[in-house]
Image 1 (cartoon, helix red, strand yellow):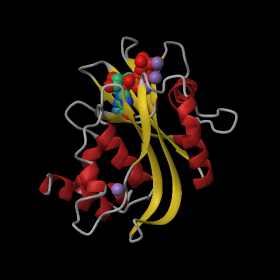
Image 2: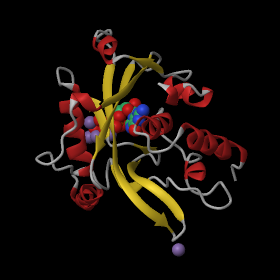
Image 3: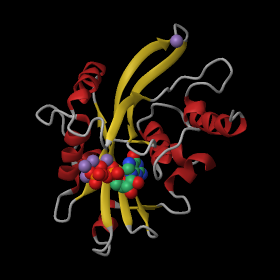
Length: 211
Ligand code: GTP
Ligand code: MN
Ligand code: MN
Ligand code: MN
Ligand code: MN
Ligand code: MN
């Protein structure tokens, strides 16, 4: 689809260590590979941040125990179904109310294989309303893993300030676990939260204006 025609976005599909793989192919992979699944929780939002910078969505990420940014989710146990394992991790890490929210197979966004580490990374979306997003945020403090495996959730800044750098571009210069930064950009493109032009601009500005 046209979102991935631009060279910058095409690069999100694979990097040196993470190659795009279909779900079908990943399920036939050698059993010595482990599987992990993480989730892009997002909600529509129409708000001016700081009274002037438009933001059209809220996206949730977390600070991990190692100080890196990533998405909630984790390792799928052997014999465990991928979405079941992902929902279990979401309950452990952010106290997601599984009676209300459940990631389904149809929410799959993209998967990558890392041959060096013998890992498959699956990425799913959980689109919710803004009210639901706030309810999810509020429940996080009661998560089993909060303060141990996970150090807190955050909203990705999706706006751009007048200098063209602060906001998303500056955020992209933080340190991310694995290919979580590419997963973030992919989710923003796939869910049409930002246009390819806006994403390319943020990527370029993050590199050019790195402070
Ligand atoms: P434990 O419960 O402590 O075993 O951890 P976990 O099951 O929650 O696993 P974790 O979320 O750390 O994910 C396992 C693997 O995925 C590790 O190799 C991480 O480096 C990697 N990882 C963690 N978060 C992300 C993420 O958001 N995106 C990607 N692509 N990889 C991630
Ligand atoms: Mn202040
Ligand atoms: Mn995890
Ligand atoms: Mn975990
Ligand atoms: Mn785990
Ligand atoms: Mn754990």
